[in-house]
Every structure is written in C-alpha cells, then in structure tokens.
Length: 65
Image (cartoon, rainbow, N blue to C red; front, top):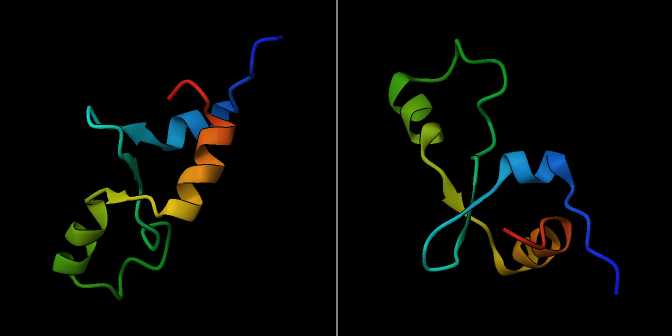
C-alpha cells in the first residue's frame, strides 16, 4: 500500500494535543479588527477544539497528525 500524503496547508492550520484532541484557530480574526473590542480579540486568540465532523475531514487531510 502506498504512503498517504499530507495536505501541507492543513498541517499548518491544525495541531493535536497529547490526548489526541485536534485544535484549530478561531474564525473572525482575519480583518475588520477596529470594530471588535480588545477582550473579543483576545478571546479569538485562544485555540478551539474541532468538532467530530471536522475531525473526520482533518484526519483525512493530515493522516499523521
């Protein structure tokens, strides 16, 4: 069986914890930052856990995560 290929863009966006959970960046920090409060911007810095549906897709894109 051939080696599975990693999608490099996905590998840069996600990380796995020691217990196997997948963390991703929160949405909403790309632009239009002037109207957002400082506390909201700080909250957006915190990584969030991927949902079960997302996890399935991420595992397909990054099999060795």
